[in-house]
Length: 237
Ligand SMILES: *Cc1c(COP(=O)(O)O)cnc(C)c1O
Image (cartoon, rainbow, N blue to C red; front, side, top):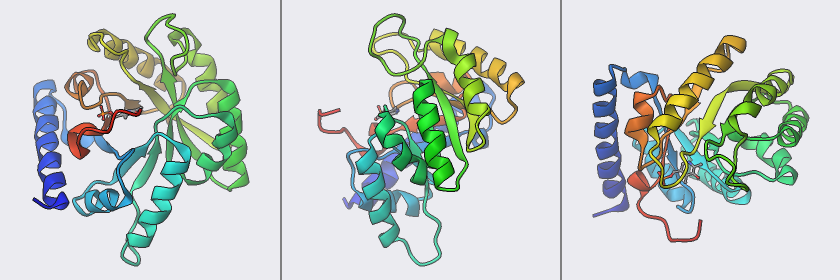
């Protein structure tokens, strides 16, 4: 089987599961954006996915994301639009300026210092960057990415107040080994509260290969799916 046929089959299976989850939740498929997480996979896979109709891809590391985007742009037929690039990984402040130049959406804004660095980078690039507040529902298990629920409002307000950032909503990675349902329910509550304060904040980014049906039940607008589409990654993450 060619790589194209393999990706097409996997993508179709995922699309069927998304359709089922939408039907069960009484939601429309077009309320949801599938972000294919292409980390560790080559630009040629991004090109195949784009050709199969995938409009949004996600990456979690800075040099890899930039290099893949540049390489991918060489593969594009003239005039074709590249997929939207979502940056979903933990981000060091000293790389924020670079990411602010090419990312369309940063899902992982989790501290004021990072928000300020992204704002400076976006301003220098003459862009307005879409940002999500990443929330950590893992409790006091230190060192995890994300702001705790009680810190979300202040960080959201800081992003919304910046001329070069646009607050688009919230994101979470469900804590490993726990039932994601209560966390996704809590995320939906916070998302609704943030949206009443900031009308541009209409994104709920939740759901990965293992838990996207639960995320659909709880109002996710963006599913970040990697392994189910591209295959298992080598253990390195
Ligand atoms: C890798 C990754 C995903 C995709 O996870 P899969 O289990 O491969 O679907 C989603 N979100 C983030 C933040 C990731 O780093």
